[in-house]
Length: 311
Image (cartoon, rainbow, N blue to C red; front, side):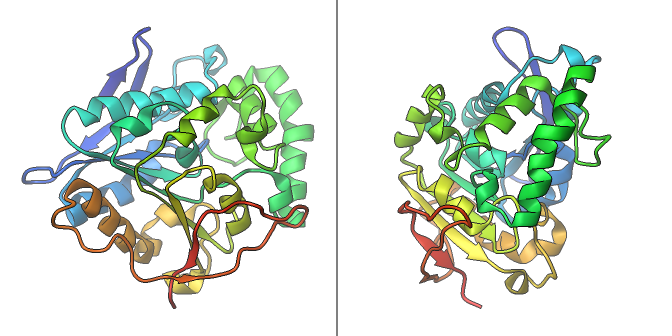
């Protein structure tokens, strides 16, 4: 068990796995909203062996190993969760180069603070704007039902969002839910929120950023990913299909599961290029440009380089 402590005494818990020999750097896995760190253990184990790096997994405050005895006492919001990532990245950077591997919210959190200044790169799966307009109509209806019908009375009653009871992952602090709901109401997520002053950090990102999104991801379809990742000055987006990964479906959650190991090889190449740039081959296999497409309610207007992995 590893622990990182904020200046106010708040503790973030996780695990740090090291290779048998010398570690060439550290990968910090920044997970999705309501997903415990344990979900990423197979990917962490694989990266240790494939890249010769240490790998850190951690739980944001309020979930998993970082949850206190009373969920209702957790007052953290998504900005606090981004500070959790920053705390871990700063600490690990003292050991050597750090690469952040994000999943969904993890790709948001990377530049919500100055964590990016302590990292050598970001490789993120399933990161996009959570706006319902980028989703299929069926998924959009389900999301609207959660935000506006189910969640408000549950949060008012419990003092937090009981996601476990809904079969949707870890319970969430009330303020995390409120941030999530508010920002998912904007086509460009928090970039459209006039109160989200932290978005200035995105313009300062200078390290390589790679996003990987599947065509069947209901929460972060390629158009949604483009809407968000276009705010990273150094980002490129790679669109994949389940067929290319050798699976029937990827959705929003399978990127980091062993059945999608075919998606991990380019990740390993990226990690090696960041922690051992003198020895690294190309960051990614050859790609070809494809035309971007907008969501069902609004066309895409961003400029992130967008590629399809060759079949």
